[in-house]
Image (tube, rainbow, N blue to C red):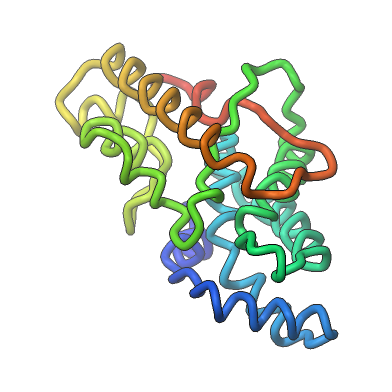
Length: 205
């Protein structure tokens, strides 16, 4: 993972009130406010790209494409609806990333998202068991100074086998699907919902 992506993931989220104020200004044509929203929400773009399997050179292209989706979402975002920008933009970002990666619509329909959890795109880890959270952090490279790891590398880091990593990852994903189902009604439906499996297709080695 390059420095740009690491910085984007490390960028602190905006408070709800700050985001609302910037969104109002952006809607009135304030380009500086619009740019600030883009920078503050890039962490969701990088996270979405990682969750959809973008790695190495493809990650940079996927993030660039996802940023286009983010900007389109910002231009249509209504802060008065009470939905956070990351929630609203999640499927816009995903659509552009998938188009860049040319992912065919054949995977299991799974909305493994961070965005419905408001202030922190990684706060969805809070509801997971310690082992589940540790596996997903390593698989997605969410800790500072780290990149996404294969299942084999995760197993070596945690002292467990690849089969155990796969099982724990699957359990975590089932938990996330349940969490998403509970909050899914909070965001307006995107123009074309993108619901593809996120990390289950990554290589084991």
